[in-house]
Image (cartoon, rainbow, N blue to C red; front, side, top):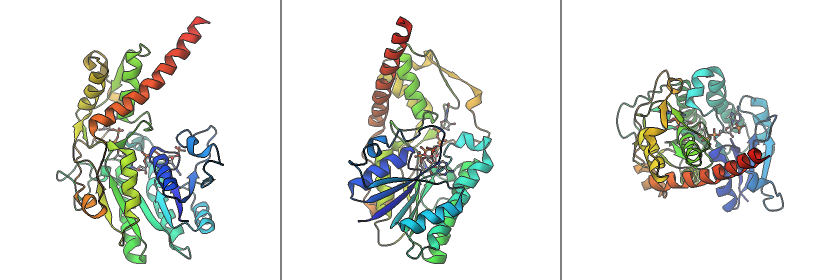
Amino acid sequence: MKKGLVTGVTGQDGSYLVELLLEKGYQVWGIMRRSSSFHTGRIDHLYKDPHEHPRLRLVYGDLTDGSNLSIIINEIEPDEVYNLGAQSHVRVSFDMPIYTVDTDALGTLRLLEAIRSCNKPAKFYQASSSEMYGKAVETPQTEKTPFYPRSPYGCAKAYSFWQTVNYREAYGLFACNGILFNHESPRRGETFVTRKITRAATRIKLGLQDKLYLGNLDAKRDWGFAGDYVEAMWLMLQQDKPDDYVVATGESRSVREFVKEVFDYLDLDWQKYVEIDPRYFRPTEVDYLEGDASKARKVLKWKPKVTFGELVRMMTDADMKIAEQEKIIKEHEEAK
Ligand code: NAP
Ligand code: F7E
């Protein structure tokens, strides 16, 4: 049985990747940070009943603690390591640049070092990001497009990208970068723009909220579905040779278009509810990203299955269910 180790197991992608690895018959270990409150909501359905999924185990660890990572890797001796753990919020990375770099850049290096010093080094997947293209020098972006990061997050991810390439070339590690463009789902963190919009719009529809405050509506992103993208991660580690791949839909839309699509679906006029709050602007913005995933399509035989419209409806429907529950609770409280 193959052994997979996932950092960032409690995050959006971690949850979809664990589902995929379990489906494929892996024994999976997830590295989880210690927290004062529960934060396993995205994987509870996989983990809560250990009889149902005895092949998923969680261990405490942190990308800022190299000795802990070494111990975990040496004990488990995984066949594949997926490094999905990160301080993944671009806006927050301007507020916490040192922590972001410690986790997202040095954290990767700590993990690579732990793998390199193992008797049987694992295959390695690095969660690289389209944020590395930043102020993009060409459109669409491919594996050959030079990086121009525009945030501490983007800079940290560019560092990790090159460390991954260098460990492959210097030590022969089977190490791959997936350069993933934005991918969303009903499990997306609520402060990323897509989920913020679907949460607010469904609450507005049910009278639970009056306004939605956003920043730059002109930014354009290539948005796909997280469930499709974790499949590309796995495929990279099943190839004969390690390499780097762009994973994207090839279609780019503005934040404004995303807002309109969601509000139209709910039969609401978005202009009545959306207001601009400069607090959400970034010191340096990434204006326009659009990926060219031809290489992944050709070599990995990967392609996205969920369309933009389907993604919007999937997220809005899921958030409508949450809003409906919130409304019941609110009415219950008011009736007391
Ligand atoms: P996410 O939902 O924010 O999940 C991040 C995960 O990393 C969480 O499990 C978090 O744990 C964990 N983490 C944070 N700091 C850590 C630390 N110091 N040590 C160990 N774990 C830590 O992000 P995601 O959307 O799933 O993204 C997964 C990865 O892909 C990230 O590396 C992200 O930067 C990258 N990426 C994402 C996208 C995208 O569009 N989603 C695109 C390109 C690349 P807690 O639950 O405890 O917070
Ligand atoms: O912002 C604009 C904002 O925070 C998208 C991460 O997963 O994808 C993600 O990073 C755009 C930006 O994602 C609000 O200025 C407007 O232009 O949803 P986001 P991101 O910054 O693209 C990449 C690929 C990653 O790797 C990251 O880990 O939307 N925007 N108004 C807003 N953004 C937020 N968050 N909130 C707003 O109110």
